Image (cartoon, rainbow, N blue to C red; front, side, top):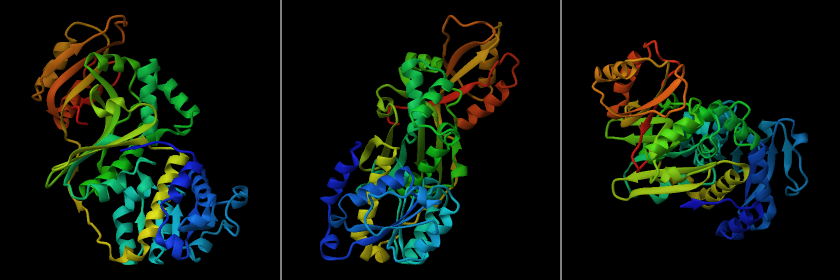
Length: 446
């Protein structure tokens, strides 16, 4: 399933064609926006294009210092306010939370649900940290909590996992969940840039924030993976339980070596469930050129689900940006409008809390940068062998100085815990110039 980008006008027309009996026979549900930034204003634009044909109507907009946000193109009669209590205590049927973060969004969403108002949100941090609690609260008060826009923006993966694949027994979700990282990695690969230059270009293009930590260090993708694990694998995972690996150490030379191995490099999020355990991580990895992830470039996202009966399903599209996320938010609004009367009797699927680790068994890539001297490879091989790890291959490109010589060792399959124990010993060796870079080498299914 591929989700492309559309203009807001085209999106509004497409959404209007999905009108329901409620929109033609009943009063449209009242919608209040909390937050009028890039996504909030795009949502308002869609709702304002042809309000008479939608089953929802924008009635309130909340934002701090709201006067600087006010526009003239919204529906007549929209209340603009900087008082959130006016919104939460008002007559809106659905609250759209787009302020982001945990606080005060958590309190505001709780208050809305307790009062029986349904909530639509794109807040991945909130849903990752408090999703189970908020879902139970919504169910208890006959409301709906919709968060399809919290993962992969305009790619309808949450609905697909909850509804379209409900008949399967999923055991793995994986993919590329952060468009900023993918943009940077594509620059490193395609143009031979160093990390700092690629990051600067991502910031100039609007893909990366001034502080890119959440993106490049894996925390943004981790929040999304936590949500996918709960929805797809019915397993409760807390964000802090998921290992994150940064892409900051990557350089163009890593793509040269990866290509020699028939691979490229992507930031891969993956979670697998057994009966009694969850494996989960977000980190850069080598992926074969014939795998689906190898062909995801720029800021695109990809989610792969693997099921016992249905096999693998892929969902790809633009995961970020105001328009793509706004489409997902409005789609959730329409779903809530269609199912509002039945929300209280929908079954609540409880996820199970299980032990979590990152102890995947993989082949591995290690890039060392050393002060060259005899015996280096022997010392590394001895340390690896002490932990039951075999070297598969050694790669070394000419043209580098001996005071900072990069070379790559690939390993036969071992567990992440085995490798970390060996690397703890290797880090003590005095010929290392930089911290070694380790990445799993994944199969084509991931």
